[in-house]
Amino acid sequence: MKIKKRTIVLIFYFFLLMLPIYWMLNMSLRTNADILGNFSLYPKDITFANYIKIFTDSSWYSGYINSILYVSINTIISLLTALPAAYAFSRYKFIGDSQMFFWLLTNRMAPAAVFLLPFFQLYSTFGLIDTHIAVALAHCLFNVPLAVWILEGFMSGIPRELDETAYIDGYSFPSFFIFVFMPLIRAGVGVTAFFCFMFSWVELLFARTLTTTVAKPIAATMTRTVSATGLDWGLLSAAGILTIVPGALVIWFVRNHMAKGFAMGRV
Image (tube, rainbow, N blue to C red; front, top):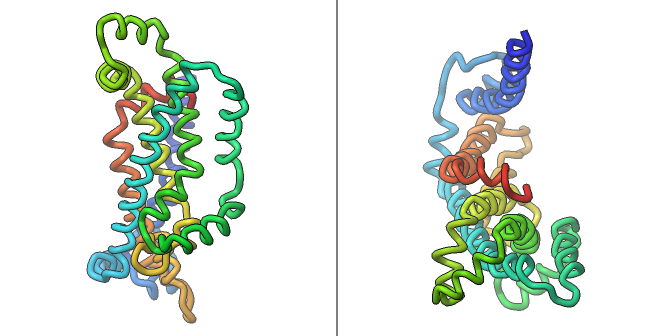
């Protein structure tokens, strides 16, 4: 009886979880007039016009390309910056290390709007407005502290004796870090990459303010569905479904590392 109750609760939970996604898929396969004209649990006259418009209109599909570009750049920069920083926090004690670690986390806690004007003025001075690297660097503000915090938890779980043994065996620090240490924390790297990708993918304030046309992300492009006649619900739903795909692919590729990472790391 307990197992049946637990199964029913899980089924109901997944039903609630998938309902918004199903409803968005349902609307994406219907015309705007059909959506506003009648209530339907499934699309009776399926149309792919909304998806065709997204894949054929450069102003739409370029938004996905721009988002993937700056999110990928940000994930790489965040990992390359956080790995040595997390190693230093996990292996060495220095004056102000706890305060600095807390300061990193405060950058993650602070609202993005607080940093928006300084970033805009700085990037305007250096001519970085409307570039992918501008958004990627801005997102490092909250992704690098998160990456350091997660990776430090994984690295602290590795005994320090391993470092000393590797040095005795003749490993240089770069070779030890890449070929010995990194494989031991690959689950943590996978989890960190996932969170960096997701937080950068869904962020809108920096991405919209620091771009205009060339590097405009899909989240900002989706606001074009608002017009004098109202929202184009079908097109907006199709765009929403397509924004889920990159995140699902990231989860698929790091799924093995994520399961172990959530169990072992500081997540």
